[in-house]
Image (cartoon, rainbow, N blue to C red; front, side):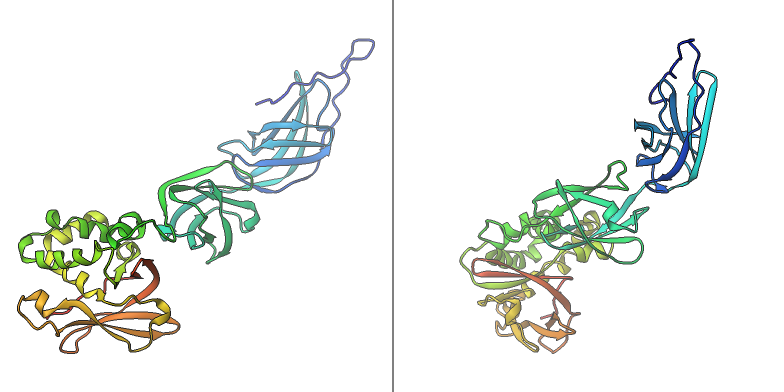
Length: 373
């Protein structure tokens, strides 16, 4: 496809001057993608009143601008790896110059990302394909912000820093100055804090806790034989809806469910089928009367939870119940439930803390669980 028409000059005898043979000396790059911009350098690349055309593997490029010693083109769609050629033509007369083989890469893709949500400054891993190995040639955007590439994890994963932004957005990207691509999957930006007074309000706004929010808000609709577990639910609500109580609560972030391949639909079906497994852990995860912080937690700390025999069986011993014990390993902090007979549930890692007035949420990478009372 011709980008411009240039007629050769005529002399005083009205004769057409011969076309000068073009020459390609070098190019701005030899590896490109469809939609990328390529500069070609040489001589006689633009001649008056003649057509200048550029091809890669016989597929035409779009000429953006041309001069005697340089041409800038856009690599056309459906172009494959092959030799570069510049052709100067007038009517049925042509002269061509062959250049280097130009390698065409596949379409750059962000195939997946992890985690599916993040706070400003968090590291996001992007599984990519056909991105440049030179990170200065990769541009990635989220919620209107250009993301900083901070490293690689293998050959196909880029690590970027989450922007200072809010809301939900999609990733877009370009490589080698090529076209802008977008991924439909939404990334959720968390905030470091929310203008709330209760845990219930926090988990409703923080996208990292949507599973827990669904569980705690939807008890009456989700639970089978709800009356059997109403006392667990009511006791939990007394804490998470209060703006005056002091306590600490261990809550699993959504990443736990995603990592185990659990979708929200599957989660809700599990709750309906086995609601008795989903409500006692909420009370086991509450430590009444104390607002903990990550800096306070020490190896071997043991805290009495809100899950007691009196809650499980009204009239039971309120001094007996599940406890939460802290352990540390390799610089990480873990918590696990200890039962009244010394049995334990699998430990979970404590990832970060969130403070709401007199309450602390200790975010974990799994469900803290509960043990029989």
